[in-house]
Amino acid sequence: MNKMRAVYKDNQGATYSCPVEIHDNKWMMVTSEGFRLITLEFQDDVAGTLSFVGYREAEPDTRLHLEPRQPGQSSLAQLQSAAAKVEAQARADRRRAHQKTVQEAQPDPREIAATMRVNAEYAALKKPRGRGVYIIKGEQ
Image (cartoon, rainbow, N blue to C red; front, side, top):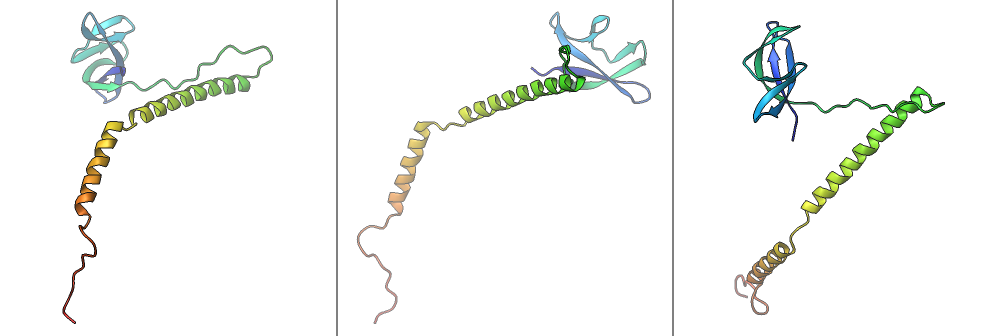
């Protein structure tokens, strides 16, 4: 399920968003103070009064997770290792998605047989009957 965010706007037009989740069978905002009802106006400690605009999907987190540095490892090697893990995961995800698409696209043998039968019937109808059927123009 895609993560959603409630979007609010202040008087100057700046937008703010907050993650939303189902809590007690209601959609609620997840704030630093806990769950809050989604209302038309929201009083923020920093931005003041915010007006509800709508919902949007949350962007995926694209930050790298850096493991603690190994003894003697440079920060560049640490960064390269983290990037390689992310790339390997993305490659595996793409491969799984491709395999799923290929499996779903496999044609049904019964449909293929039915299509071939119908095509053979049409071909038989178009095939001329008898030998040497020609149109003769004029007499000689």
